Image (tube, rainbow, N blue to C red; front, side):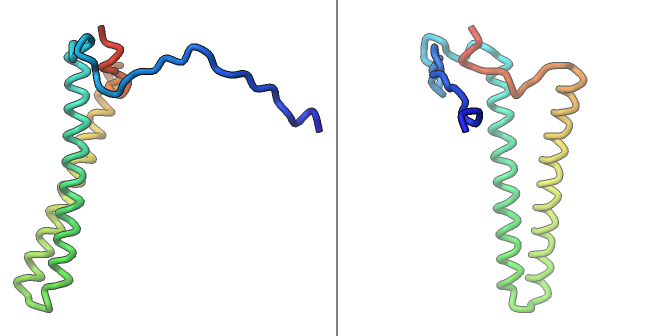
Length: 114
């Protein structure tokens, strides 16, 4: 059984970074600021589309067979799905641009930019 046991050593020199930039470091890197804003916008857009989709579903359920309410709910669901598709296409376009230009926006760190 000794061949199954591996030696484990403690890790040394762990760099601890705060998730929010300190005033000394600040938001000095424009690319990092743009990346943070883009990430936030993607998240907000996706959550908004999802909430809109849920509201359309609830409107459909509570329409009670009324043709106008059902049609309005169907339009809302369709618009929400189109919104989710637009958000996904924008993200895919960003990934393609990253591959073509070689700039990886996901690895830009505000804290490492000095």
